[in-house]
Image 1 (cartoon, rainbow, N blue to C red):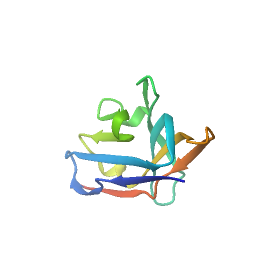
Image 2 (image 1 turned 180 degrees about the vertical axis):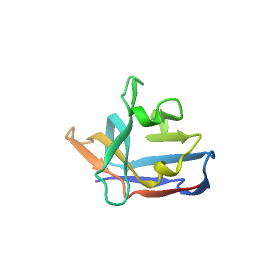
Image 3 (image 1 turned 45 degrees about the vertical axis):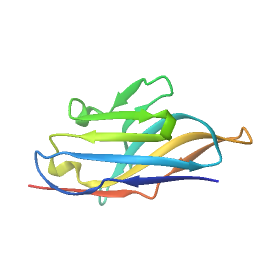
Image 4 (image 1 turned 45 degrees about the horizontal axis):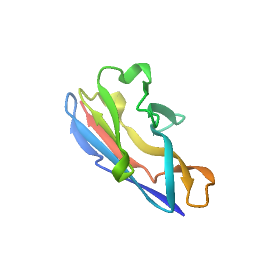
Length: 120
């Protein structure tokens, strides 16, 4: 089994910063794509940022220039540095990863989510 555990959410004023972390643990052989999604109340879950095993990054337009995704392969951890936060960034943020288990089976996993609230 593989678990993804997020941390770092919280309440911040507009213009502030937060850093989210997501650590993968369990029967892991390798991890390919890692990503952050978010879901605001009444809205569909959307992709925020993605990073591949070769460190290729992609971002949704609304966070470009403000958010940075990174990963530490030795720690099986992905980060999301969020700067210049806006009230519209308020959402539950979820970690997502494509993980190959020790049995060489690929599966997609989700974390439990961490709340980010940006006050105006």
